[in-house]
Image 1 (cartoon, one colour):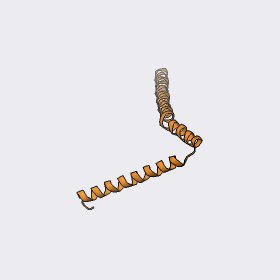
Image 2: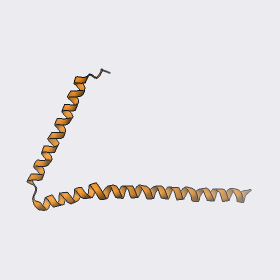
Image 3: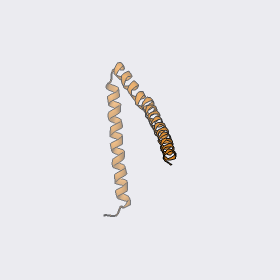
Image 4: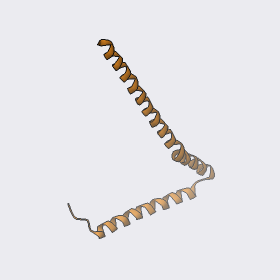
Length: 87
């Protein structure tokens, strides 16, 4: 494995910056060419992705963990009663 030197790191950072800048320029040109209804649709989709989708994923994870916790409690209680009944 080769050693990293500062010039290689700087070249990598410069390449990442150039790729990011090119992507931003492409996005801006795309937005400039959009019609107002298309721009509104893109804004609504972006708002959905940024706000509603993460909320739904967090709620899903919360309720899934709650379901697992309740299931563990119920199964643990049943096993304990079965052991007491067998003794």
